Image (tube, rainbow, N blue to C red; front, side, top):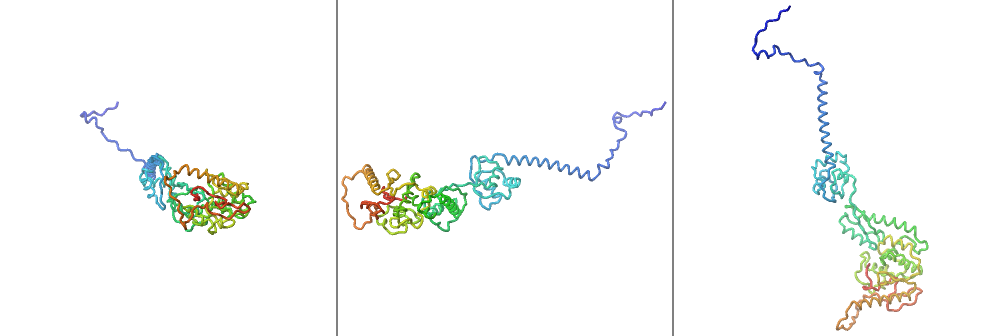
Length: 419
């Protein structure tokens, strides 16, 4: 039987204290390995980076795709040679974006669009997100401005219109040759040079003219595309009604076939003012017989070139005129014209129109209580072209001396105006 060691009485506090503190466990050799230490550090850093990347991705996605501050669609011009910071400043100033410029720059880099930002005028949609804004600039879909060139303008008048339009830049070095520009509606971005506009109008005219010339009536007396443009310019200036163009063209084509003078008033005006296009007053009687390369009351056949830039419709009508025998036409008082084959019929239409105009004048003008007697003014210029006496038409009865009987006689008041 073993003997127990005697129990030494201790105080309660001493009884609670351990007799000997155990030594700490030894650190394993593996934990002390430097590769393990480095690996743990790397793993910790990766975890931190992943958390940071996730937070950045979430913030970036929210920034890119959140609705922007624009309350309505807006057009903003990004100037040429603008850097990313400049673009950010412009967009912020115009209220397109509401983020820090560096956030915009960072977004551009994130979308890999650093070298794809293009200058120009852009339309940004209402509440466009930052991603949409950057995509719009990268795509380069700039605003296209519609520019309408009316039919019948001279080249000088067209250049003046382009010079007055502030969406274009530069100046036109030389007035284009008459009849080489196609009147139509075009679309151009802001900043297009005026020379580029002229080149596009010329290219369009060449293309359209070639197409129409291929489809022309082979029996036409017109021998070249240039002659087609010249006659089409006269047709353009004689009527603005679509339903009359082919018939007006037929009158002039029939006159060319019969070797009659064309006798078109707009050619007189062009001979007087050239590319300015507008006379600003009625044609004088003396100007009807005044020699000019463009005065078709004096010359035979076509003038030396176009008197304006005809549109597609007038070119089509001139290339394929109506099949009629008409040789004359005169205004009918309703905005159109009355067409006839013989001079006698034409004279009756002229008389009818004058009677109608006289009746309208009597109905609208009250006579004075004491009319002053008419006074002759020797040497005064007569500005009434209907008082002229032109050469008689070929194979037609001699016209009376009371009026000018051209192919396209205008007897409305004022007698002749630029259309």
